[in-house]
Structures are given as structure tokens and as C-alpha cells.
Length: 326
Image (cartoon, rainbow, N blue to C red; front, side):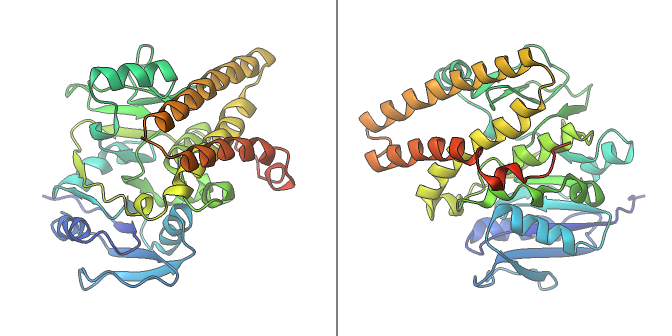
């Protein structure tokens, strides 16, 4: 007998994902058990998507990944939510698989592994590891992802069927299952800097790592597979903001969630050295990208400004008034 699960589906979109969004709606239509409600949140002033289920509830919020996501969560009437971007698809038993570790008390968030987000190809894997962006895990094989002092992460690509559930310090925010009360308690809306510059870079890492620091664990379910169809509409329509925010938000994440969480002087010195190492390689990468035509000179200028403005932001009243992480 199919177990009853009281959950909602919360979707953030700008209404322009087209066929990819239709594939998500098809997946939702086939979910077993069906959700209590489907909440679709768009930015204020945007048109509704032409693709519809016919019974979803539409809502509007200020434009931004965090603003839209939390608007949907705050409207949610059920204790659990499947939180999605507008470009994913999954099987009918997807929610059943994600619900089990939460029901068993293993964590308050769950997701399937998304191997397409991990580095692929020997050159890419090696370069990301050297730069401190992402590296195959060595020390934490019981985790899917561990956050590094560089603000990058180590990852476990070889999850085993006989283990089934893996803790994770971060997840791809494209699609996950959440305890709604826990989601609200993480207080992602307090991190106003994420949406500050037109693109909410790293908002998923902020959400799950902040949850981890507050004792609210995320679990990856080894066989809960889904596909990211990758519309990238927010990046394509706003490239300068994407370039700038990726640098700005990374620096603020490091300061707020890594450096300031260290309890000892030695820990803070090591965190600073790790981030300076990352900055060194990122600046080299940006210069090489400009010289080879992968970035324009203007893109390079925007990237450099993102780093500079983040360090100025640390001295601002706005930053000093942010509430404690833990």
C-alpha cells in the first residue's frame, strides 16, 4: 500500500523555461502520492508561463532566487515540500525515496545525487582540484559533499547502493525535499546579501551549509535520481550580474560561514590562507580566460570589481547588522 505523504511542490520560475518546464509539470502530474498543492512563484511583473497543470497556485514576489523560494515556502500549507527550479524532471516514486530518511530522523533535507554538477573529464577534475574549487573526497567518504575552507567542496561520486544514505554539507538547489519548519528556521531570508546584486549565486550552498551549522542535516539518497534539464535562463538574461555576484557572494560566504565560524586563531589563519590561495588561482583563471577570448575584457573588469566590493562590504553597517549564523 502506498504511504501517504503530506507535501507540497514549490517551484520558482521566471516563466520562460518552455519545454523544460512542461517536463517538470509532467513529472509532478505523475508523482505518487500526489502533492497536496503546487505553488509557483514568479517575479513581480512577469507573465504566467503558458504551460500549466490547471490546479497550481501562482504567486509573485520580488525577483530573486531566495525571495521567490522563501515566498513559496511561506505559502506552503503542508509539513513537507518538494522544492524545484523550473528545469528538472523525475520519476513517479521520487518523493517516496526522498521522504524515507526524513521520516527515519536522519536529516531534515534530502535530495538525489546530481552527478552532472560535478567536474567531468580528467583535465577539468584536475584543474578544479588544484584551484580549490572542487576535489574528489579523501577524508569524508561517508558524505556526498563537504565544504572546504576555500569555499569550494570535496565530493563523493561513488555512492554505494548498500549504504543508501549519505550526509551532505551542501546540495544543488535545483531540486530537494524539505521539512518546511526546518526550512523556515534556517532563516535564509536573513541572508539579504545573496539577492543583493541581481543574481543569487551560491544560495544553495548558503542554505544547506547554514542548516548544517545549525544542526539540521541534509541527506543524499543514492538512488533518487533526477535530471537537470538546464534552462539557464537567469544566467543567459543577466550575464554581468552572474559574473559579479559569483565573486561577491563567494567572498561573503567565506567571511560569514567559514572564517567567522572558526573558534581559534589558528583556524582563522588557516581559513584565510586557504581563501587567498583560491583568490590567487581565480584571478589567474580570469586573466587567462580574457586572453583566450573565453571572457571579454569587460567581463574580467566586472569579476575584479565583485571581489573588491565584497571586501568593502565586510566593513559596512549592513554587514555588521546581519544576524548571527548560529
